[in-house]
Picture 1 (spheres, rainbow, N blue to C red):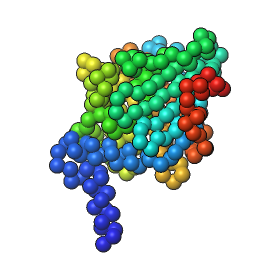
Picture 2: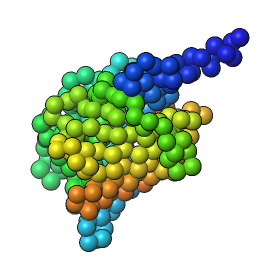
Picture 3: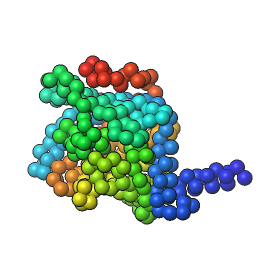
Picture 4: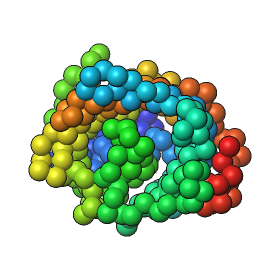
Length: 258
């Protein structure tokens, strides 16, 4: 009886018995979020490769620290190590479940911290195809949802849901997300601009599991369909529960980031 109860609860959380597409879409997003809770903190290394329409490339090396919050969105600190012209640049983001996020950028050449206005969150992050709003943790409360369909995604089977940003300053009217049915990991996201035209696509691959539970994509590729530019993020050296605290993510941490 206990096994049947667990199966029923799992089906309910996955939205199988939800009455409307909106309820089912929300249930799927909630289940994906629940499966990633409890990691506390993480650190990782990242290589960012920018490519223009002509195929010219430039490479940047970064480190990323993340701190999970119990009643709010995650805090993250991104530090640029190479090349020399961006070394020491640091980006601090406090994601909030409701309301605008708090984001700051430290520019070592100017020796000052610049606050990112909520009206500018749709702008490109350091010349990449990722917007500032893409770098926030994807909290369930930031969107409204609708289940669209089930379909294959590569070798997997996926739920396809639509999520519409709640923030009026978002650069997107909507996003279509493919989430695999086995582990509830995002596999692909299509982003539609303010004119509701397909702007870019983010694909996730090379997933690794940590602590027997938490999945992280080691490869994230963002293709801008309107400009022909792309950004590839390759992740490595993930470490979890390293003892990070709020003190590691205050505004002073931007200037002392090394």
